[in-house]
Length: 471
Ligand code: 4AD
Ligand code: MG
Image (cartoon, rainbow, N blue to C red; front, side, top):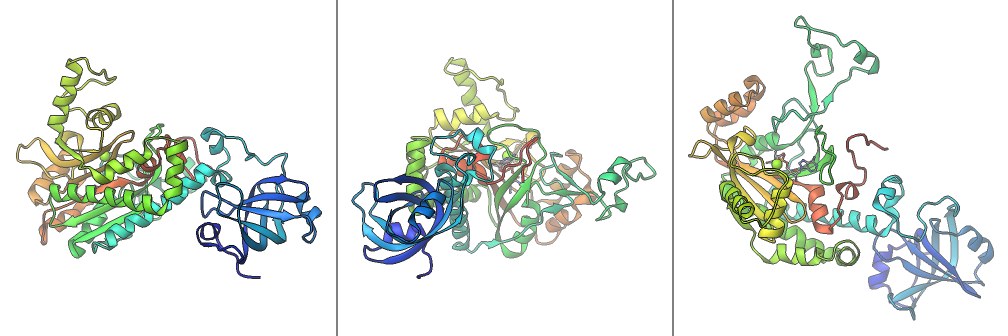
């Protein structure tokens, strides 16, 4: 028998009369008088392949006894034009192998619709549903489009470390990594000043899971000009929201010889590219999201691809919000005044209701942003940029970096960070410093934005959030 083919390929290119083999999991089984309809899905596409098993094939009765929703099968046969609607071809089975049965009494994914909350409790099975299947195919297509975008522009993909010694964002939201075991943790070795003696730990000093690959990406950009990272990052912030994960993936390009404007241009071109590639490569899945999850998904994608993003400064954004409140057009839970960190409700108002498209907000107060952002001439704002998206809020955060040694030293001191820890970062400003800029895209927030999925836990295969660590 021929080597098994993927169902996606058969649905688009299979010719009636062709003999072939498929493998997959049974979605539905429906018996008629002299044959049985079996829908098989192998994960390659939203639609499965309709199989007709006639009663004269070998071991028909025994196979039909064993086959139920969730069972795994291999089926060989001949393709035929399908008289049924919704599919071009169907498979006339000639030979069936059942790899594994699936107990109909206990298999949780029966035909009815399940809530996403319920599906999260069966994270090992939920990827077999239509929605999660579509999510993870789109996620894969996004990742591919991201690499394609950077690779065709001569950006080098750099693998930055997961274990780190420095707090990039300076926000102290890091997970500590230690080889002290559970027994050691009961009585950690102490140094003379009474603190934990990390010199006895694996690295001889405190170690953490990275919150961002940016600082290491900056090092590499100072040799290769344009680089990007794409990997997991970790934050120990106790945010139990539909947009926060403790472990999430981030894409971080970093460009030498680039200012804030070039950074904004790259971010906009980047999102446009990813959206248009995913629409091309996952058309069925995107249709599905538009029909079943959020009927603005395709319109949003079209909007991203075809219209310019709005661009305003933080100061303008605050003025806009203040006048909206004054006019009584909108009320917010959190008060608005110059100097506040924009809350999600403010970000969403700007993108969703005011501009009705992504908006790039720039030049935030230095006080609310990280130490590495370039200080503007006004002495109180920095060359930061956040890209805010309808429904999501902040999807990208970035900045032009502080390339001046003296200013950077001052900023590190003001942030209360130990200068010794950043000796190498300061060295980059001593030896051939250049204006440079970059940003970080929250990968799961992108997938949420693309698919309309309401909860970030449903766009990553194995979500990690406070009090939740399965598998
Ligand atoms: O704005 P952030 O903190 O920026 C940085 O980490 C910079 N070092 C990036 C850079 O300039 N290279 O995070 C970047 C993005 C956010 O805009 C958001 O989309 C996402 O990462 N993000 C999260 N996504 C899911 N769960 C969380 N807890 C997230 N925190 C940030
Ligand atoms: Mg941010």
